Length: 103
Image 1: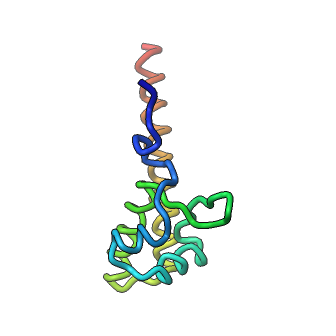
Image 2 (image 1 turned 120 degrees about the vertical axis):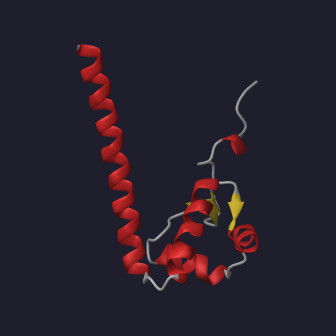
């Protein structure tokens, strides 16, 4: 049986309105996050924002940080650093695996 789009956490399935309702935030807030490059949802062929489950989790994370008083500029930098850290951890796992294979 083939995987369905909703099985993929990166599949852009949700509209701006659906996400705003789901997270109980204003649509303008989601647009602002996009405009400030905090989160960049996919676009439909008609140009409408489409959010994945991963995007929605990121919006929740961003909202928590904003509620703690962080600015969007600071939040964007934190997200960048979190991505870099995740990539470095993956590189470290791969290097350790290679070292383990060569022994």
